[in-house]
Image (cartoon, rainbow, N blue to C red; front, side, top):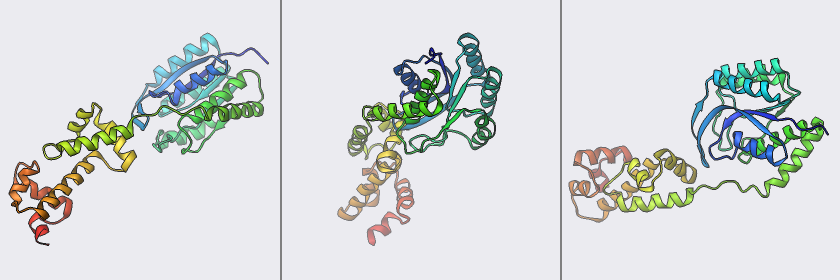
Length: 294
Protein backbone atom coordinates (compact mmCIF):
# COMPACT_ATOMS: atom_id res chain seq x y z
CA UNK A 1 0.00 0.00 0.00
CA UNK A 2 1.05 3.57 -0.64
CA UNK A 3 2.37 5.89 2.06
CA UNK A 4 -0.48 7.65 3.81
CA UNK A 5 -1.02 11.32 2.98
CA UNK A 6 -2.92 13.72 5.24
CA UNK A 7 -6.70 13.61 5.09
CA UNK A 8 -8.62 16.88 5.01
CA UNK A 9 -11.90 16.94 6.92
CA UNK A 10 -14.19 19.86 6.16
CA UNK A 11 -17.01 19.96 8.69
CA UNK A 12 -18.44 21.48 11.84
CA UNK A 13 -17.15 21.36 15.39
CA UNK A 14 -18.97 19.40 18.10
CA UNK A 15 -18.23 20.63 21.61
CA UNK A 16 -19.01 17.18 23.05
CA UNK A 17 -16.52 15.52 20.63
CA UNK A 18 -19.13 12.90 19.74
CA UNK A 19 -19.23 13.92 16.08
CA UNK A 20 -17.90 16.63 13.79
CA UNK A 21 -14.24 17.40 13.32
CA UNK A 22 -13.34 16.03 16.76
CA UNK A 23 -14.74 12.58 15.93
CA UNK A 24 -13.06 12.66 12.52
CA UNK A 25 -9.66 13.42 14.03
CA UNK A 26 -10.03 10.67 16.66
CA UNK A 27 -10.89 8.00 14.08
CA UNK A 28 -8.31 9.06 11.51
CA UNK A 29 -5.60 9.14 14.18
CA UNK A 30 -6.68 5.78 15.64
CA UNK A 31 -6.25 4.15 12.23
CA UNK A 32 -2.81 5.61 11.67
CA UNK A 33 -3.83 8.50 9.44
CA UNK A 34 -3.07 12.19 9.87
CA UNK A 35 -6.01 14.59 9.94
CA UNK A 36 -5.96 18.19 8.83
CA UNK A 37 -9.12 20.27 9.03
CA UNK A 38 -11.22 23.19 7.89
CA UNK A 39 -14.07 24.16 10.22
CA UNK A 40 -17.37 25.25 8.66
CA UNK A 41 -19.46 25.81 11.80
CA UNK A 42 -19.01 25.94 15.53
CA UNK A 43 -21.85 24.43 17.53
CA UNK A 44 -22.89 25.03 21.11
CA UNK A 45 -23.80 21.46 21.91
CA UNK A 46 -24.57 19.14 24.81
CA UNK A 47 -25.16 15.39 24.99
CA UNK A 48 -28.87 16.21 24.51
CA UNK A 49 -28.50 18.12 21.25
CA UNK A 50 -27.38 21.31 19.56
CA UNK A 51 -28.22 24.60 21.25
CA UNK A 52 -26.71 27.08 18.78
CA UNK A 53 -24.95 27.24 15.42
CA UNK A 54 -22.23 29.75 14.61
CA UNK A 55 -21.46 29.36 10.90
CA UNK A 56 -18.06 30.64 9.85
CA UNK A 57 -17.83 33.12 6.95
CA UNK A 58 -17.04 31.59 3.58
CA UNK A 59 -13.78 33.59 3.40
CA UNK A 60 -12.53 31.94 6.60
CA UNK A 61 -13.45 28.46 5.35
CA UNK A 62 -11.75 29.20 2.04
CA UNK A 63 -8.61 30.37 3.83
CA UNK A 64 -8.41 27.18 5.88
CA UNK A 65 -8.83 24.96 2.82
CA UNK A 66 -6.34 26.94 0.72
CA UNK A 67 -3.69 26.86 3.45
CA UNK A 68 -3.95 23.09 3.89
CA UNK A 69 -4.17 22.24 0.19
CA UNK A 70 -1.22 24.46 -0.72
CA UNK A 71 0.98 23.15 2.07
CA UNK A 72 0.38 19.41 2.56
CA UNK A 73 -1.65 18.44 -0.53
CA UNK A 74 -4.14 15.96 0.92
CA UNK A 75 -5.40 13.52 -1.69
CA UNK A 76 -8.54 12.56 0.27
CA UNK A 77 -11.14 15.09 1.39
CA UNK A 78 -13.92 14.13 3.76
CA UNK A 79 -16.81 16.61 3.87
CA UNK A 80 -19.41 16.86 6.60
CA UNK A 81 -21.72 19.66 7.72
CA UNK A 82 -22.24 22.54 5.29
CA UNK A 83 -24.87 25.11 6.28
CA UNK A 84 -24.29 28.01 3.86
CA UNK A 85 -24.44 28.20 0.09
CA UNK A 86 -21.40 30.49 -0.11
CA UNK A 87 -19.42 27.95 1.94
CA UNK A 88 -20.59 25.24 -0.44
CA UNK A 89 -19.29 27.37 -3.32
CA UNK A 90 -15.87 27.55 -1.68
CA UNK A 91 -15.72 23.78 -1.21
CA UNK A 92 -16.90 23.00 -4.73
CA UNK A 93 -14.36 25.44 -6.21
CA UNK A 94 -11.57 23.87 -4.14
CA UNK A 95 -12.46 20.37 -5.35
CA UNK A 96 -12.43 21.52 -8.96
CA UNK A 97 -9.17 23.41 -8.51
CA UNK A 98 -7.12 20.84 -6.59
CA UNK A 99 -8.72 17.66 -7.98
CA UNK A 100 -8.17 15.32 -4.99
CA UNK A 101 -8.21 11.58 -5.70
CA UNK A 102 -11.17 10.96 -3.42
CA UNK A 103 -13.99 13.16 -2.11
CA UNK A 104 -16.18 11.55 0.55
CA UNK A 105 -19.38 13.27 1.56
CA UNK A 106 -20.97 12.31 4.87
CA UNK A 107 -24.50 13.57 4.19
CA UNK A 108 -25.23 15.43 7.40
CA UNK A 109 -28.79 16.79 7.26
CA UNK A 110 -30.27 15.63 10.59
CA UNK A 111 -28.66 15.11 13.97
CA UNK A 112 -29.05 11.89 15.95
CA UNK A 113 -31.59 13.81 18.07
CA UNK A 114 -33.63 14.63 14.96
CA UNK A 115 -32.61 18.29 14.77
CA UNK A 116 -32.39 19.82 11.29
CA UNK A 117 -28.76 20.72 10.63
CA UNK A 118 -28.91 22.07 7.10
CA UNK A 119 -31.37 24.62 5.62
CA UNK A 120 -33.48 23.26 2.79
CA UNK A 121 -31.99 25.50 0.11
CA UNK A 122 -28.47 24.43 1.10
CA UNK A 123 -29.43 20.73 0.98
CA UNK A 124 -30.80 21.26 -2.54
CA UNK A 125 -27.62 23.02 -3.66
CA UNK A 126 -25.48 20.23 -2.17
CA UNK A 127 -27.43 17.62 -4.13
CA UNK A 128 -27.03 19.55 -7.38
CA UNK A 129 -23.47 20.79 -7.11
CA UNK A 130 -21.46 18.76 -4.62
CA UNK A 131 -22.69 15.20 -5.04
CA UNK A 132 -21.65 14.91 -8.71
CA UNK A 133 -18.06 15.69 -7.65
CA UNK A 134 -17.94 13.07 -4.90
CA UNK A 135 -16.22 9.72 -5.06
CA UNK A 136 -18.47 8.37 -2.36
CA UNK A 137 -21.61 9.59 -0.60
CA UNK A 138 -22.31 8.07 2.80
CA UNK A 139 -25.75 8.21 4.34
CA UNK A 140 -26.84 6.84 7.71
CA UNK A 141 -30.33 6.90 9.22
CA UNK A 142 -30.90 9.88 11.57
CA UNK A 143 -31.73 7.20 14.57
CA UNK A 144 -28.19 6.07 14.20
CA UNK A 145 -25.93 6.54 17.17
CA UNK A 146 -24.44 10.01 17.52
CA UNK A 147 -21.23 10.26 15.53
CA UNK A 148 -21.47 6.81 13.95
CA UNK A 149 -21.48 8.21 10.40
CA UNK A 150 -18.44 10.33 11.27
CA UNK A 151 -16.45 7.32 12.43
CA UNK A 152 -17.43 5.24 9.41
CA UNK A 153 -16.75 7.91 6.76
CA UNK A 154 -13.46 8.88 8.42
CA UNK A 155 -12.38 5.23 8.45
CA UNK A 156 -13.22 4.95 4.75
CA UNK A 157 -11.10 8.06 4.13
CA UNK A 158 -8.12 6.53 5.93
CA UNK A 159 -8.27 3.27 4.00
CA UNK A 160 -8.61 5.11 0.69
CA UNK A 161 -5.59 7.23 1.61
CA UNK A 162 -3.66 4.00 2.13
CA UNK A 163 -4.42 2.86 -1.41
CA UNK A 164 -7.35 0.52 -0.82
CA UNK A 165 -10.13 0.28 -3.40
CA UNK A 166 -13.48 1.90 -2.58
CA UNK A 167 -15.10 -1.48 -2.02
CA UNK A 168 -12.30 -2.72 0.22
CA UNK A 169 -12.13 0.60 2.10
CA UNK A 170 -15.84 0.36 2.93
CA UNK A 171 -15.49 -3.27 4.06
CA UNK A 172 -12.60 -2.38 6.36
CA UNK A 173 -14.41 0.70 7.67
CA UNK A 174 -17.51 -1.33 8.44
CA UNK A 175 -15.47 -3.90 10.32
CA UNK A 176 -13.72 -1.15 12.27
CA UNK A 177 -16.97 0.57 13.24
CA UNK A 178 -18.64 -2.71 14.20
CA UNK A 179 -15.71 -3.51 16.47
CA UNK A 180 -15.83 -0.05 18.01
CA UNK A 181 -19.60 0.13 18.61
CA UNK A 182 -19.35 -2.20 21.58
CA UNK A 183 -16.70 0.01 23.15
CA UNK A 184 -18.20 3.37 22.22
CA UNK A 185 -20.52 4.00 25.12
CA UNK A 186 -20.46 7.67 24.24
CA UNK A 187 -20.30 10.63 26.56
CA UNK A 188 -23.15 10.53 29.08
CA UNK A 189 -24.63 13.72 30.44
CA UNK A 190 -26.28 14.15 33.83
CA UNK A 191 -29.80 14.71 32.52
CA UNK A 192 -31.61 12.22 34.77
CA UNK A 193 -29.81 13.46 37.86
CA UNK A 194 -30.46 17.08 36.90
CA UNK A 195 -34.14 16.43 36.24
CA UNK A 196 -34.57 14.95 39.70
CA UNK A 197 -32.76 17.92 41.23
CA UNK A 198 -35.09 20.26 39.34
CA UNK A 199 -38.18 18.46 40.68
CA UNK A 200 -36.77 18.60 44.22
CA UNK A 201 -36.06 22.32 43.87
CA UNK A 202 -39.57 22.86 42.53
CA UNK A 203 -41.10 21.20 45.58
CA UNK A 204 -39.10 23.52 47.80
CA UNK A 205 -39.65 26.80 45.96
CA UNK A 206 -42.88 26.51 43.92
CA UNK A 207 -44.85 28.74 46.30
CA UNK A 208 -42.29 31.52 46.13
CA UNK A 209 -40.85 31.32 42.62
CA UNK A 210 -42.14 30.20 39.22
CA UNK A 211 -39.33 31.61 37.08
CA UNK A 212 -37.36 29.13 34.96
CA UNK A 213 -34.17 31.20 35.31
CA UNK A 214 -34.42 30.91 39.09
CA UNK A 215 -34.39 27.11 38.93
CA UNK A 216 -31.63 27.06 36.32
CA UNK A 217 -29.52 29.25 38.61
CA UNK A 218 -30.27 26.96 41.56
CA UNK A 219 -28.93 24.03 39.52
CA UNK A 220 -26.02 26.03 38.07
CA UNK A 221 -26.99 25.35 34.45
CA UNK A 222 -28.37 27.46 31.62
CA UNK A 223 -32.12 27.73 31.10
CA UNK A 224 -31.63 26.28 27.63
CA UNK A 225 -29.91 23.16 28.93
CA UNK A 226 -32.60 22.70 31.59
CA UNK A 227 -35.21 22.88 28.81
CA UNK A 228 -33.34 20.22 26.81
CA UNK A 229 -33.28 17.96 29.86
CA UNK A 230 -36.99 18.25 30.64
CA UNK A 231 -37.96 17.89 27.00
CA UNK A 232 -35.88 14.72 26.64
CA UNK A 233 -37.17 13.11 29.85
CA UNK A 234 -40.83 14.09 29.99
CA UNK A 235 -41.51 15.98 26.75
CA UNK A 236 -42.36 19.24 28.53
CA UNK A 237 -40.78 22.65 28.94
CA UNK A 238 -39.62 23.64 32.45
CA UNK A 239 -42.26 26.39 32.63
CA UNK A 240 -45.00 23.89 31.84
CA UNK A 241 -43.80 21.60 34.62
CA UNK A 242 -43.66 24.52 37.07
CA UNK A 243 -47.15 25.73 36.18
CA UNK A 244 -48.67 22.26 36.30
CA UNK A 245 -47.18 21.55 39.72
CA UNK A 246 -48.41 24.91 40.99
CA UNK A 247 -51.89 24.12 39.68
CA UNK A 248 -51.87 20.85 41.61
CA UNK A 249 -51.20 22.79 44.80
CA UNK A 250 -53.86 25.38 43.97
CA UNK A 251 -56.50 22.72 43.28
CA UNK A 252 -55.60 20.98 46.52
CA UNK A 253 -56.05 24.25 48.42
CA UNK A 254 -59.38 25.03 46.73
CA UNK A 255 -60.83 21.57 47.34
CA UNK A 256 -59.56 20.73 50.81
CA UNK A 257 -59.31 24.02 52.75
CA UNK A 258 -61.62 26.80 53.88
CA UNK A 259 -59.24 29.53 52.77
CA UNK A 260 -60.66 32.29 50.60
CA UNK A 261 -59.54 32.61 46.99
CA UNK A 262 -57.52 35.64 48.00
CA UNK A 263 -55.78 33.75 50.81
CA UNK A 264 -54.95 30.91 48.45
CA UNK A 265 -53.62 33.39 45.92
CA UNK A 266 -51.19 34.84 48.47
CA UNK A 267 -50.33 31.38 49.81
CA UNK A 268 -49.29 30.30 46.28
CA UNK A 269 -47.09 33.31 45.70
CA UNK A 270 -49.36 35.51 43.57
CA UNK A 271 -49.19 39.27 44.03
CA UNK A 272 -52.94 39.72 43.75
CA UNK A 273 -56.19 37.81 43.47
CA UNK A 274 -56.64 39.19 39.95
CA UNK A 275 -53.27 37.78 38.87
CA UNK A 276 -54.14 34.46 40.49
CA UNK A 277 -57.53 34.29 38.75
CA UNK A 278 -55.98 35.12 35.36
CA UNK A 279 -53.43 32.32 35.78
CA UNK A 280 -56.10 29.85 36.87
CA UNK A 281 -58.38 30.67 33.95
CA UNK A 282 -55.49 30.25 31.51
CA UNK A 283 -54.70 26.82 32.92
CA UNK A 284 -58.22 25.50 33.52
CA UNK A 285 -60.47 27.70 31.35
CA UNK A 286 -62.62 28.41 34.41
CA UNK A 287 -62.44 30.78 37.38
CA UNK A 288 -61.18 29.43 40.73
CA UNK A 289 -64.53 30.27 42.36
CA UNK A 290 -66.51 28.26 39.79
CA UNK A 291 -64.01 25.42 39.99
CA UNK A 292 -64.49 25.26 43.74
CA UNK A 293 -68.28 25.18 43.40
CA UNK A 294 -68.19 22.46 40.78
